[in-house]
Picture 1 (cartoon, rainbow, N blue to C red):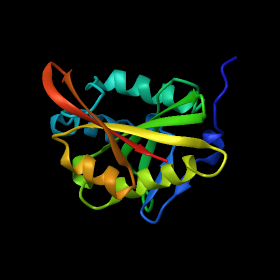
Picture 2 (cartoon, rainbow, N blue to C red):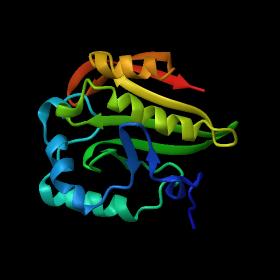
Picture 3 (spheres, one colour):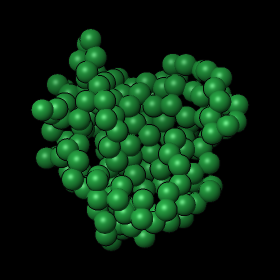
Length: 182
């Protein structure tokens, strides 16, 4: 049986000053489908928009999925700490590497919650957990060079640039920037 590389499920929820990282559930449908259907949020993301039924199926799957299975992406909910309303999510994929475990992350936040430092707090919460001694050796992230807020967030969280590659993304040529944090 495929087992999680790290005990992330047991660590959730992770509490920040303004955000909480937690599992997502079907109760998050309205919020999740709202920001995942926003063309401005979806434009530079690795995921595609989905119907309400597909979103509900996805949320139900994420609620039951063991978090941290090797090579499998999972989504961790980002909620407002005071209301527990879902405001975004962080994608996480863990892999066994020669030097230990490495993680890759991606993040999305509903447009009305952007620009307040909440995504930075949420990403930092996860990084603090992932990079604690004995867990991950490094955390990777990539973003489109047109996504200035995402680049700024990664830099504020201590990521260093590692690569620059021309790719075709969603049918459009772009430059994908790679980042790493140890």
